[in-house]
Length: 276
Image (cartoon, rainbow, N blue to C red; front, side, top):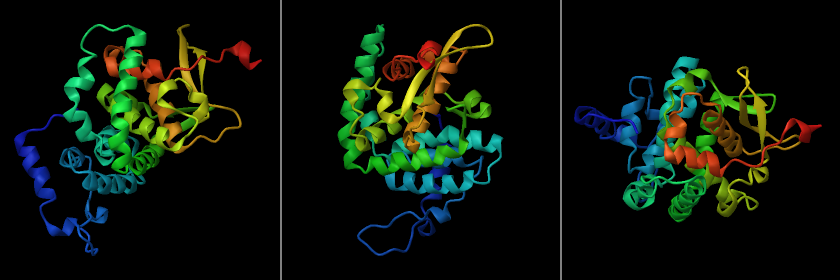
């Protein structure tokens, strides 16, 4: 999670203190007007921090981010996308849930856990987040997030991937936030995909394949199944999983939550023999 100084927080709060950051729509409460939120690579961090505990603001920042990405350079896109998952977590209404239950939810990962324990732990986290996610309109936030990051995803030979600039800059905590929001969104809209069997990515129109790298190592990849038309959520899930599976730095394997998500969502791989 990005750290912030007290001074930066004060600046971020100042951004939302004026009425011109609200719309003039009638109603019992005012909505933030995303048109009045002007994002730059210099202020996106402050805006992201300002969304903490404020889902309506987070949703407005996400809409502004969608527009900004349309004209972003690859370098700018990498910076903007590095904050998108944090904003999405707040927009989904589950940011507070994760903070409030942090000790109970994440404490289990402190101790040494085997692969099945990691999968069981992450399944428990997702189950406990589902209620607040659905009550807070998280499904809409998840769709907005998937549509936002879609501009940074390319699909080559059926494999969704992000730009190398983004992959080089992203941290495990960003991947965790992204996958949790996307998974909760897919679970709420896809009756064939359920939390008790997260490895059933076939239900999302995806498959796990095994590829041989240039160095001769076997590497899993998540691809779109032939003849399928996955949702933007599912495509984004595949792209984030490929960040984990293609990593050679070890940083995602060292993070127990990222490792657990990678294990939980890995289906039985399709080999070259299966494709013949």
